Image (cartoon, rainbow over all chains, first blue to last red; front, side, top):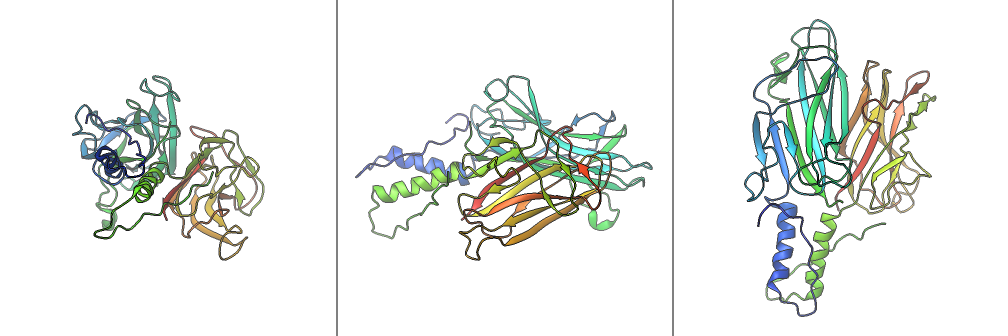
Length: 207
Length: 178
């Protein structure tokens, strides 16, 4: 089967012994709980600098931990670009992300949100038009080298269609803010707990 | 419209499954693929004058196949199909400090009776430039039809007005488990 297809639930007639129907039901279950349920998880292994102040900037994720569509014949994978998730299978998606910024001697606000862009197949979002969703904000301490972490979870505000993209973006009120790969040990218990990451998964049929 | 919870049959060894069994399993898949889920958001600001918790109101439905939203009660999502639910929400508080918490109120179908309230998932945002305060998690209690959930906004003193900068406040409930 090429690209992941949203299942069609079969109906069984009396004395129905159709193998096709049973295979269709098995495919439903594989889609719901198996390896083909669309999902991805990416994280950063290199620090990213948000050059401009007060500007939403897409975070580029260097490491793809999991991409359910990457090995599906006919699919390019969800995180092929490493910077934005490109939807391959129609549906409502849950999206989550965390980002850690390094504070400077002056406090700055640090926001995180998601930006969905129509990819040409979505009747709810024309090609190239965007819809921002999610959104969390926080303010750093005015203490250099400490960190602030912002986490966000939302669902796509419209059904996502193949070739729509979802970007994780951050914004800071100061220029040259560094988005960390990890929290440095200040204090030590923080280390390794908050890696800047981006994940999502299909949750429901939609149109 | 409320959905009927699936009843997955048990098929013992030697038993020949009939179309009723197979359709019951198919319905379970149908339910999981189309499970109850609602998402709403605000396109207008809201001024909070009370120092007690006030429901954040929403005026636009993004998705509501189960009918959890009602414009007559714009500050809540009312469960139609029983189950455990996951909430996600964000309240765009602008540049004032505020508390946000989740409030569950039981309805008449709940075994403990109607009108009981449960506060959970409290959070606070400082009065800074961008106060986008949100959260997500599984609501503590099993929800029965008629139970409802609200995002409550609390300003310690004075008045405050939510903002629409970047994104208006939003709220969703997703059915997770029987």
